[in-house]
Amino acid sequence: MRRRQVPLPGGRTDPGRRNGGGYSMNGGFAGDQLARLSGFIEAKMALHFPPTRWSELENKIRSAARELGASDAGAFMDELLSSSLTMDRMETLASNLTTGETYFWREPRIFDALEARIVPEIMNAREEHGDRRLRVWCAGCSTGEEAYSIAIALHRALPRIDDWNVAVLATDINPRSLLKAKAGIYGEQSFRNAPSWLAERYFRQSKNGKREVIPEVRKTVSFSYLNLAEDKYPSALNGTASMDIVFCRNVLMYFTGERLRTIVGQFHQSLVDSGWLVVAACECSQDYFREFETVQFHEATTYRKNTHPSSPRSTTDRVPARAGLPIGLKKRKPVETARKSIPQQAREKAAPKAIELRLEELADQGRLGEALALCEESIDRDKLDAHMYFTRATILVELNRAVEAMDSLRKSLYLEPDCIGCNFTLGNLALRTGDAKTGRRCLRNAQALLGRHPDDEILPELEGLSVGRVEEIIAESLLSN
Image 1 (cartoon, rainbow, N blue to C red):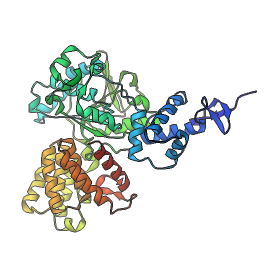
Image 2 (image 1 turned 120 degrees about the vertical axis):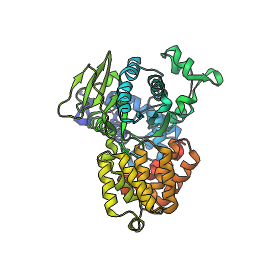
Image 3 (image 1 turned 180 degrees about the horizontal axis):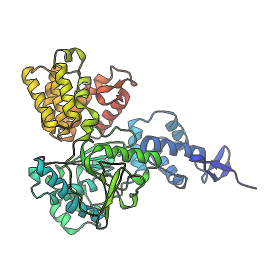
Image 4 (image 1 turned 135 degrees about the vertical axis):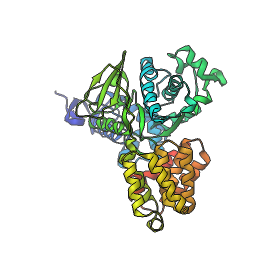
């Protein structure tokens, strides 16, 4: 007798056994359940589990169910599919579904390219314009080994790094991995393929034979939660705009089709002109990276943001670096964001319309220094202008001048304490700069203010996020800090 063909995602079929209500896997979940679960996980977390990995998915869901105290894994899965995904469940699922397998100096040829090619080109271009800042995003950082490896490479490549404003943003969907990353303490397994000089020069001895990242490297890196499937980027609010380099290695392999194209497109937008995207060797694909030019450095393949995406190039020659404008500002218009953050009544007493329009024009053109100067002139005329302090802060964030931005946000909040955008932005900046007390206080203030609004209300000052989504982001930030 011919076995029944069970529909799978995408219209494919797979032979299965009848077991009561349908397909089963060794007495486990039914095939239609696993198909729905796979689609759910991909939509919510951008993790792809094809039918060949359904057995693995089932085992991981059973583990998550036990961890959350559910005695019936099948009932837990049904509930998961029929209700909203809480942050507690998201954390547990992420911890069980994502792989934390990583180590220092993985694929050394990439770090050779970073030190010998990428950073020197950025440095030379920036020196010409007197702009000594360098921003790197390590997306999908897991337990932090790659992010610290990047920071170490930057220390090696920049001979006078203290003269530079260098920041490595490391994000991940797994809060438990982030906690380990923030601790910066690692065992021998994390050094299994690293050169000996790395541990000797950039780590110090810790308890139980482990090693701890030295403070000079740790201060370069900040860690935060970010879900590549759901969160908005590029964004000044989560620090993902105007990046010089984006690292996303051994992460894209878990994405498929349009989801992968969308994420790569967002990385493209997150980069400044001529910025660099670094992926794992097994993830390189001309099909998915058409908007980039392919750059070979010895055996390493990297991608560079092509300012003429209609004619992608591939090169092994040295490409002159071009100082790019911060496109995050171009797309996100910080002046407009600030205007939407401050109540209209307060704005009417503040900056004239002509100043706002001029600020928007300067920001759109990437002329941030001039925009900042105009803000400060306006503040000198009216020191009670909450809107202008917030506008100044958004520009300072794009310039990677976090301490000054925080000071400006505090002044704005003093004048308008109920501003959700100010509280949320200051809270996130404080957490990123190590001021957990201020960060938690401001995020709790934002949480309380959001409680006055319905979950589905859109917040234009937070780039179109809903109240409910911002509440989830805050809850996750408070949980992991």
